[in-house]
Image (cartoon, rainbow, N blue to C red; front, side):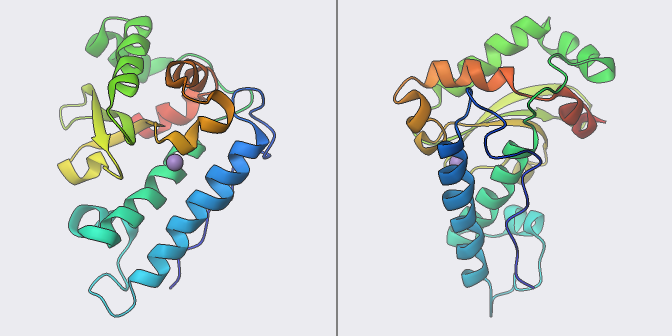
Amino acid sequence: MAFELPKLPFAHDALVPVISQETIEYHYGKHHQAYVTNLNGLIPGTEFEKADIETMIRKADGPIFNNAAQVWNHTFYFEAFAKSGRSVPIGPLADEINKSFGSFESFRDQFSKAALTLFGSGWAWLVKKEDQSLQIVQESNAGNPLRKGLTPVLTCDVWEHAYYIDYRNRRADYIKAFLEIIDWDVVARRFI
Ligand code: MN
């Protein structure tokens, strides 16, 4: 069964001016699509031919891991955006953010720093540990915390293709704007 590029939950121009339609057309329409196409070309005849993407992330190496993880990571990244979503967390997620990081402001600072200081291409993640506490982790390239037994809750793509059209080399400006279009209701559903 071939994997398909998932539909975005918003129009391609919905995130303007934070993320332009041109960035969506390249990042989603070209890069995300390429990972899906690559994965479909890689798995026939391998032990992963009938596996789900999470299994490939946990067990595959090399090109199958890279493309499976990039498919999953991008779907997860795009799903958290909304034109007018909940701008701050509430409920159990808000409580755990306060407990793990001190405050929402402190979480934002720590998450932004992780995204900014990640050297090269990769992803900054907010993850839930087995004890329900939250942690911020950096992963290079296609890295995904599922491989370490952690539950992803939020991710920021800091590959240059995610921001170079709109922000050029200003990764810090992209990260600041990224946090403004997160729908915290989506993030909360992942935490429960
Ligand atoms: Mn990307």
